[in-house]
Length: 96
Length: 96
Image (tube, rainbow over all chains, first blue to last red; front, side):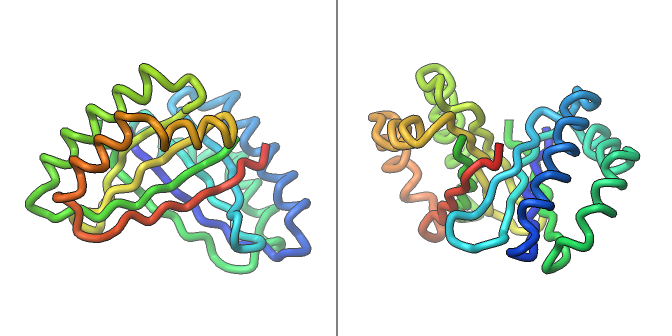
């Protein structure tokens, strides 16, 4: 299993638009990716506009397939104008 | 729902001992805490000895109950001698 923590910094006046795009993306991930076990958008309690996506994948193949889907790429393009910085993606290996 | 990313820095020659204690803790969390939806130990691909626990709780009550269990406190005491730094615990609110 593989973990991902994706940190996304969004312009503070664009958070509603960002969340709408992400919610649609997450629905498609859940509908189409059995190898994506967790895909949860969360937001920082301390930093306005800062979101973290907590993700778990069954294996490296599931992670790679996620990034190649048409809906993931389309969501990235839609979110682009709302972002305040480049995404920071941290990859982690599950211990058991 | 509430997310937690706990970053734990472990002495690099104590990782096996740390993982054994954590695995036992996680088994007890899964057996006893229906409000803890995800509790996954992962390790950094880049930094030796750095672990992140990806956690999701149904609500604030479930998060607080987790921290008050006897087995959580006992595990913390057992892990103490293996740590290289104090834990960093980030609390996050789920967006949906």
